[in-house]
Image (tube, rainbow, N blue to C red):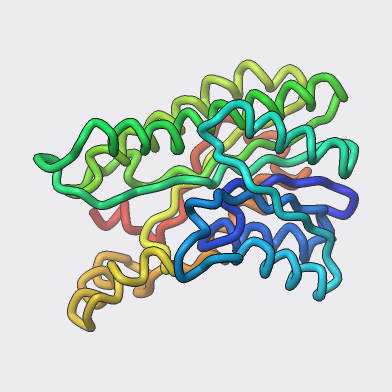
Length: 259
C-alpha cells in the first residue's frame, strides 16, 4: 500500500492509460479522483467513469468521479476545490487527459489544431498550476506526473498537431520542475509508445498484418498495456523517486531505440 493516505487526481482517468493509472493508485491505497470529460466519455463507452469508480470501491478502494474539461480554467478550479473539500488535500496529480484525432497534415484545420493544443498543453498547464498552488499552500511535498508520448521526439505523418503538444509537455515539465522543486514538489513525465487501449485498438489491430507491423517495431516483441505505463507513473509518485525531477521516462519497449 505505497499510497495509503494519499490523494490523487488522474485527468482522463476513466479510460485507457488513465484507467490503468487510476486502478493502480486505488489498489495501492490512494483516494482517487477520476477526472473525465462528458465529451470523451460519450458514445460506446458512456458512463465509464462512474462504472470505474464503482469497481474501485467494490475492490475496497476509495474513489470519486468528477467531470471537468481540463482546457477550461473554471472547471479545473472546481475539480481542485472538490478534491480538497472531499479529501482535505492533493498529494499527486497525473496529467493524463489528451486527444489525438489522426489527420493528414494537408487536411488539418485550425479548429482541430487549437482543440488538441487546448486539451494536451493548456490543460496540463491549468491543472498543474491549480494543484501546485494548493500543494505550496499546504506545504505538501507532492508529485506531478504528465503523460507525454514518444511522439514528443519522433514526428509521425498523421500527428503533426499532436507531437508538438507532447514536446511542449516535456519542456513544460522541465521548467516547472525548477520552479516547484524548492517546495519539495517533483514534476516528471512518462513517454508511452504503442499502448493498446480501447481508443488505439482500431489503429493497431486493424488487421493481422497491421498489428504485426507495429509489433515488429518494438524490440520486446509486443504492444504495451496501460498497466505498463501505470507502473512507471506509480514509481515516479513514490518517496523512492523523490530525487527524480524534471525527467521524462520512456515506456515504449525500446521503440525509440529501434527507430
